[in-house]
Amino acid sequence: MTESELPPDLVLRQLLRDRPDPITDIALAARQLVLNCAGDCCEMIYEVYCISDAFSFTGKLGQAFIHIATYGQHVNLGFNRGAELDDPHDRLHGTGKLIRHVRLASLKEVGHRDIKRLVTAAVSQGRQMAAQHGGPVAPFVAVHWKAQK
Image (tube, rainbow, N blue to C red; front, top):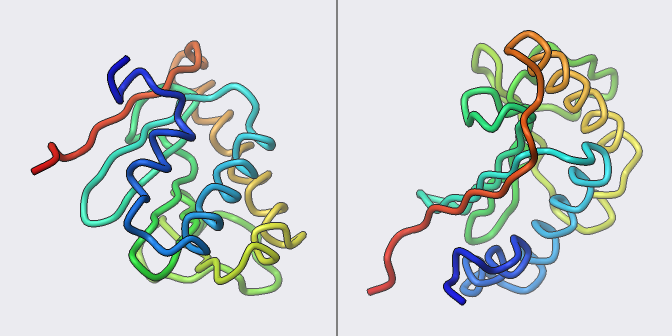
């Protein structure tokens, strides 16, 4: 079995192996929250300047509704159309045209009701986006990472 055939949680653990355990735990808990709220969706895991895990109903990265960016010392839960989300408690940060994020500092924060509400709203956005682009596709996981040296 090659690494690309591993289940996504094991792929993520492999990619996150050099991160501190609390950071890995937060990233995996955020992933589970998204999957619990979204149900069947496409997951795109890739390594760039961070470990990114994006979720879409169309299988297209440009139509992702949410992403998790795991850095060396922190995790951001990114909302691809976050500027359009209702955020009465000012949890979302960012100044770009669309993308907003929440910096997750603890496992407890991942489970906070404000975070769950934002994720649920982003999932709804993702479903609407899929409907506008021909409907959802069958769920899949795509993994892209840098070759090991």
